Image (spheres, rainbow, N blue to C red):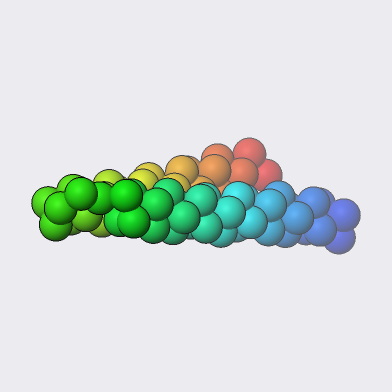
Length: 73
């Protein structure tokens, strides 16, 4: 693998990691908003569960992107 190919690969992996990080930040603020606007404890708990689900989805999406990049190079 050439040096330019490794640099390109590492940059693409870094971009995928950044996207994952921004996804977590988005999910955090979305969950925080749901907690603040919750009218009762049940809605707050549902917000927590939805936040956790969104975090898992963001991580899974990033891992799939990294796997596709790894296969293509």
